[in-house]
Length: 385
Image (cartoon, rainbow, N blue to C red):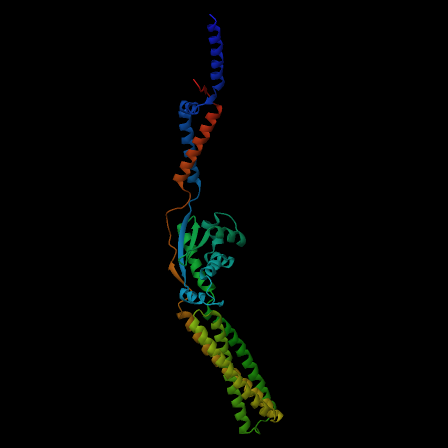
């Protein structure tokens, strides 16, 4: 009789302990069941989203891409030789492809393409808009992508709503690139051409001065010795001019040479040219002293005659060098080579209809599922039983 109350008193705390350990939890099935109950709504929303993505892709303009490739020549052998030297030598190698990338991405290149293809009047480019040169430049820059590859090639990717226009833009950039690249021979041609024009003007002025001098003075009294001094002075001036040109070419090669052997040879040759120039200058100074002792009329005549003779020699030398550099420019390997010209590719790259349709359907399904889960009642279960 006395134990029964004790047992009942012990049982009560045990029941309270189990109830206190019970925790209310939300099972995953309570989230899935509302979605299964409204599966028709999910299917409809998914189809609507997919259809929306398909319609948007259909309404967007089709974009086509064309590719052109060039290869920038590099002297890897020279670079490996110079890299082992204990001193830094500026060989002028650098990264050639970066130079062409800068040219292809420049506003000058874009402007040349717009002008040559008359893109401001082309509806396939303007799409009915009235664009000025700046707006057209920005628009075309967004449609052109230049990529450098580790192999040394440079890809020119052009995009347009017409595959043929994309190819024309890429090929026009290749054609314009040849006129923008400044090679060593081209720099020499430009320099010599300017010197030729300057020499021709000086020669015409010198001949006019000589004509006026002959009309105003009688130079029959000039002896053969004076004429011999004049001719010798003219010859020395021609030699001095040739040495100066050779020295300039050697200095240019020293600044851009890539091989160690050529650096040594050019340096030795440059020192020899400087020694020869010093000898010619000393001999020329002695002749000037002799000419200074001649009578005034003879001295003036000698100066005019020497000036004309030097200008004639300069003109002949520059003409020969100009022709040689033009031949070199046409026959040299060039600093780049065209690997592939752009061709029309009728496979569009944008819009991606399949991708947009799938993304639209997946996004609509996710939004519908979130909405159903947010408004559906959540069932709770207890653990511990």
